[in-house]
Image (cartoon, rainbow, N blue to C red):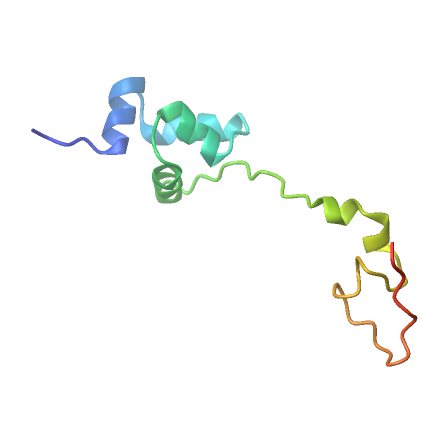
Length: 98
């Protein structure tokens, strides 16, 4: 019994070169996870094959809710931002509790 590679399975199922199919998915703006779901294989396989053909998929946004927090963005030190940057003075203002 011969074990087929992921690339062989893709070529057999879609009847086109793997590179062309992955480029089409990338042009659609899909992430590697979305491509893996479509191809019914692991994300690591998709990423490995994409790297082989120098194809990059869309990367999901990793926006943190903390970056939208007004207390965190404040220019004065407070309980949400006291570890986020160097405040520079031994006489920093007192930490404000929310």
